[in-house]
Image (cartoon, rainbow, N blue to C red; front, side, top):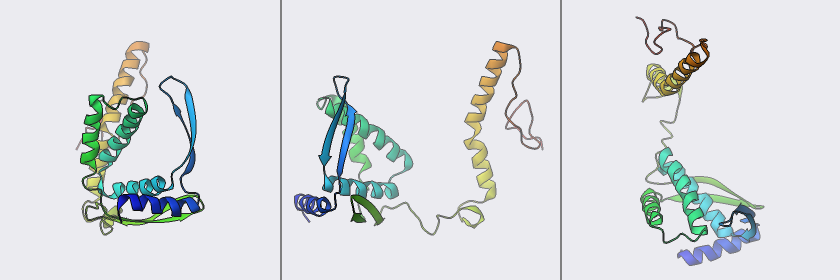
Length: 194
């Protein structure tokens, strides 16, 4: 279906179910809050379906950056900064992030709600056969999980240790350090005596 015809059809069908009716409250360039009521059934349906496709084809960091830059882009656009060169930079990222966002999404609309029933894409990173946890997973085992957990928490552990040492220097009292694991050196967290 052609894009304009699709939007017209979704507006008609979605509008009959009250899809896309909302009130937006936001900041204005003048520094005051503004409020606007709107009805955009096609936009709500398409955005909901599109975001679900993004969940299966983009990495978590692509989605995170896209969300951050999308808000930034919208703010600048709203404040009449469309011709600022940073807009082209953001557009380049957004265009790149969308290269694999293609597929089929099935949506259900009912009483003002849009629910994605499922989606498929040839670029999907979702592997139903490999999406298991625990001992049944073929790509890692308990040892890998233990090592990953230790490494994932290392930066937070080191930050807490540094802050504790700094606080001890300021107050001349030594706060308790991070808990140690069995066999771990109390003076050098992360080093296990073997």
